[in-house]
Amino acid sequence: MDSLEEILPIYEVGSSRIALFADSEMRMNVVRFGVRESSMVLDLGSGPGTLARAASEAGGTVVQLDVSRKMLERSPGSDRIQAVFEALPFRSGAFDSVIAGFSLRDARDLLSAVGQIRRVLRKGGRFAFCDLGKPDSFVRVLAVAIYLRVVVPLIGMTAGGRKGFAFGSLFDTYVLALHNSQLVALLKLFFTDVRLDAKQAGAAIVVGCVA
Image (cartoon, rainbow, N blue to C red; front, side, top):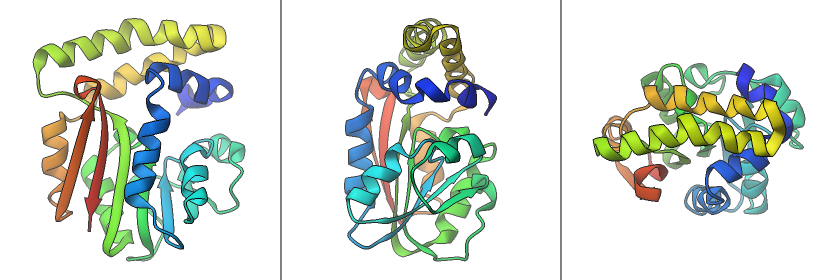
């Protein structure tokens, strides 16, 4: 969280460069799958509100949730909640959709977080997110790890000087992340339909689930 708050002024610019400018299209794919006109939407790890704005434009009523108050203060939305994924402060079945943009891997306890997401979704609701992916191939995992460890801090520096080195914390979350196939297996414990679209040789993923 400290790393994210440090790079807040350059968060969107740096993130876009690190994703090789594929982030906007990935977020739009999340919205296309997850958001319907007049749906009640929960945006997990909403950050400065980038994904929430797209969901609102698609006709959703969006509640933004983030662990960082500083992130929420940067967001233009009015419905903002400071909380963690593992203890969502909402009644069961409260939302038609849950979406997340490059944030789910930050859960301290992914199993609990996904269980909470399923709980707050109504039956037939949709969960969609985009994130870093972790390929099943060892060679690809190693290539992505080198990119995150070596190249990403340099990209961050071009976006915001010394503060940009904080983007290097992406490597730490990547080391702990599940492989793509393991993530799908976990999601299938809670959702009847799970679709994972791997991009950039599996280093980026867009996932759609139906409750």
